[in-house]
Figure (tube, rainbow, N blue to C red):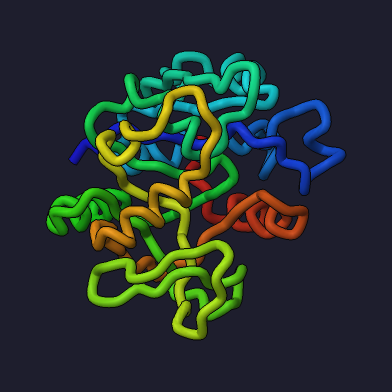
Length: 237
């Protein structure tokens, strides 16, 4: 199965990785010998992705220059730039909608999510809901748990609220329909969490549990762990 278009949110300032990211964006940070974005794109190609839209902001032109049209990664890569001000994760997606079609996958530009992607799409389609969030049984190990998940649905999601029932964490791969974003103003900053929260309140957000932990380069510690993982398990160039 060819995957729906995939949006990679890679426009942030990456302040936790300073001074590394003073002159380069997070997607271009060297991990296991090459820019991190190269590892992400090879993984997506392995999972039969075809179209990838990179949502870029801070120093995004460096990413575009390195990746180009994506053909050397076996992908069709397109670009959506925030413009004069950063739009946040939600605003970046809203601006990229013309390139994404009616439904699309979302992942973050600092995450390496080594899983089978097709079953995630299948689970979303079977749910009949407007969106899906992948979750991991975190139990507070890798970061603060922020999700209540039961029987294929997200019952609660919050980056602020702390509830003992929150045993899961947002894994970082999601599915949304364009319709869930169209009510938001274009070219205005907002967070993707607002969209997820609205879907939860409406009972319209499915969940899919992943059994394999996530890797990320958002912090020096995460960068070191991800480097070690990719050196051993990364998709070959």
